[in-house]
Length: 395
Ligand SMILES: *Cc1c(COP(=O)(O)O)cnc(C)c1O
Image (cartoon, rainbow, N blue to C red; front, side, top):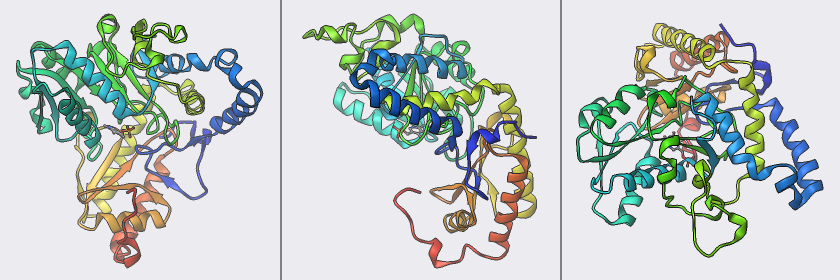
């Protein structure tokens, strides 16, 4: 089973790309759109482009397009900055909403940057907040009445384990906590219904499953009914109600615009906007069906042919995102051996071989061929080569 849009992507000849969970490949529409935009808009219009080419509206316009993919209503999502910054904005706003509570609850499956941002915010607020990190299976029970904010990444970047948004959000609200979801490995990977979940905040990045390119901007969602009360910690001029009035004092803009900070990354947003065209021809439900099929096929093939590997992802597809991970003692050199043979996955310490199975541009034949190569690497100990031991700066 495959989706009929693989030819919308640039993929080097012979490469099987199973790393779209880290950096999505280049959609063909992006090169054309970017080159036209750079030549005609930046090149010819220069400063006039802000009005003429509607650069200033990009963060909200593209935000609405991303919003459609995650069940958010128009006007509730805006683009900008990086995910770490958006985590900081959501968390600082959430803590202000619960001034009498001092606990931020997260889990050990969260991505370190989210936890680091929380730690930095706590240090600088210096009001006695605490970051409480529990096992992913304990999150629901750990929401107690001292928790100000529950900050959870839905899909674990290492194992692909997926939390149930509705259940955790319901529990957070039952205990009076504010809910923040990080959708870094969900947006464009699995169906998400933010409005139905009723969470207050969501954040995510667009260079993974949304194929916006390296350095593509992040997004932030704020539930519309609370927007008017949000006092942004990062009160930059483009989140001001009237940026071009150049007033001395900050006044937050109306609606989601107040979550903007400074000048938008216009070229990156143009690339992302072109990349999002892919979603005109495929629904999230179709994508999910194809993704589950690819993951099930991959797990069955690896378990049948590569017994040295142990499944690190949940076996139940309902509890898994769009990636599959295996542990293997020699996972790092084995992944280097795979990459040298043009099967691109990645490695996460300790011992995790991670494979993103993204049906926009990966089909069943790719998955089977990837397992052929993996089996060869294991059966013939091809990983046992000093060239594969060196660690690069980015793994
Ligand atoms: C990828 C990822 C990040 C990366 O943050 P940046 O600021 O975009 O570098 C943060 N959090 C999670 C959960 C991620 O998966």
